[in-house]
Amino acid sequence: MEKSKNTNLINFTIDLQEGFYDDNKVIIKVDKQNVYTGIPKTDLSLGVATSFECNSNSELIEINIIIKKFLKDINITKSIDLRKGKAIGIASSGKITQAESFIYE
Image 1 (cartoon, one colour):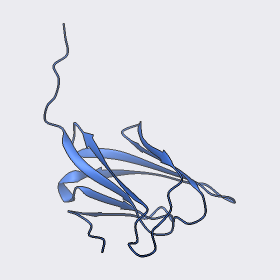
Image 2: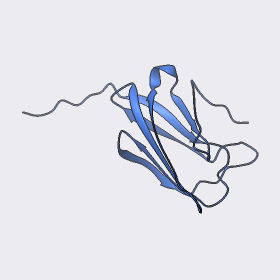
Image 3: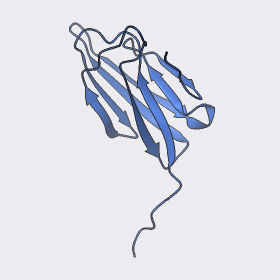
């Protein structure tokens, strides 16, 4: 039996925001799937390093943030309810914020 494809994907955005200056490798996983691997650099004039779109079959997601730092890695896993906002901001400290959207000027 063939699995039916779910066309009701929920779109959301992940923004790597302030504090990414030290050439630290960042890995972001959503529901155990790798969605970002890189070395982001925060733009001082905007306060954001990078922004990317993701999608999920569920409004409840699990996000795992790994930031490889020189002395001690940060590894945080958090459950997020996308009904509370479809924009997720992540700082280099591992702090997570959630909103309907983020505006950078």
